[in-house]
Length: 87
Image 1: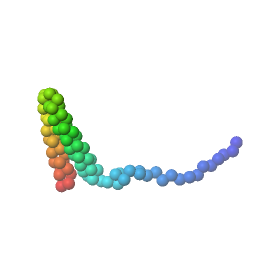
Image 2: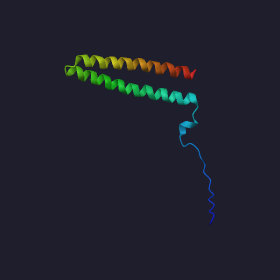
Image 3: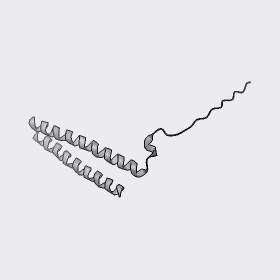
Image 4: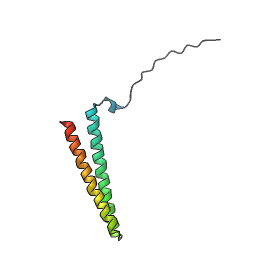
């Protein structure tokens, strides 16, 4: 029976650049991402609210406007959280 030795080294490290960020930095990036993402969605909600109203779906349009307003409230929470992290 032959014994085969296999010598090689592996440098196991994380290729994710974000892993080099502190927890606070990661959290700020996430909050910023969520804020921007929500702003994009809010615009879409408002567009569809208007389209719904134009297509005789007043109640749906109003509900989508409410969702847009709620999204704005959520964004204010993200902004407040970001300010707290940065203190």
